[in-house]
Amino acid sequence: MGAKLPRGEVSLDDYRQDLEQSAAYARVTGFSVKDAVPATWLHVCTFGLQGRILRSKEFPFSLAGLVHVSNEMVLHRPVGVAERLRLAVTAENLQPHKKGATFELRGRIHVGDELVWEGSSNYLSTKADVPGDPPETKRLPMPEAQAGGASQRWRLPADLGRQYARVSGDWNPIHLHPLTARIFGFPRPIIHGMWTHARALAAFGGQLPDAYRVRVQFTKPILLPGRVGFVVDGDSFAVVDKEGKPKLVGELTEVPAAS
Picture 1 (spheres, helix red, strand yellow):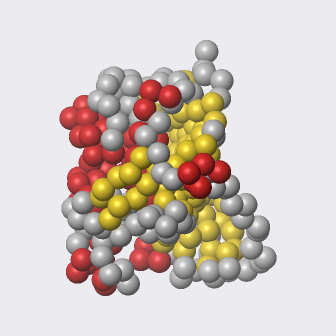
Picture 2 (picture 1 turned 45 degrees about the horizontal axis):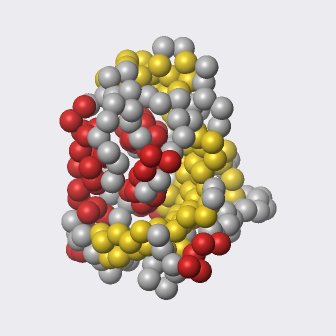
Picture 3 (picture 1 turned 135 degrees about the vertical axis):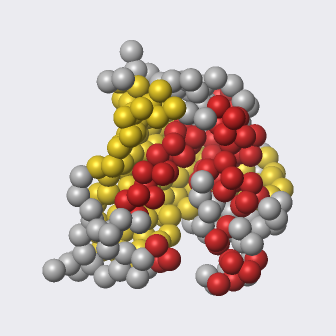
């Protein structure tokens, strides 16, 4: 029998957002602190449920071999920090990959009966073997504006991984200290992909629409401490190193707001 993902969903029917943690998250990721929370914060709200799936006895792969490849989320309307949420996460779409196997953790957030947010995190398990031909992966385009240089530059301090871990709950050792990062083959800690995702959204400032879809692909790790640039051209954006090579590539599109 081949590997199988856990069936069914894990859920939490009445989730109260932590106001202090939400404000701290906004400060660490570059957002303004206000009543409407970032879409990436809602991903953080589902992170505990994701962990329950990944740590369950039914989950077939080692956590040590997981790589966050891409993320997609849709914010259907602004969500206030005081709103009570209904959270649900499922594991889906197990597929072969040339380096192992990929799967998705899909999250959905409702306020009452209204779907306000949904997201999908695609993971690669490098220690898995799923039979079949890997599907073709379409790469998001780099923004054309990169030739003109970055519109913003960010300095990432050495302890940024620990700062983000405190507000997100993601204490993966590759992000925390040089010693723990070296155990997993990194010369220095790397920043969480979801910090980079959040910081890129924060870079749009007041230009973010009330409802939108955002897709990102994580292309290369960012070592800490470090410096990166942000480039944007229309719907496309990227986080790049000093040579202009992408660390994250993304696409942001407006969607009709929930009525």
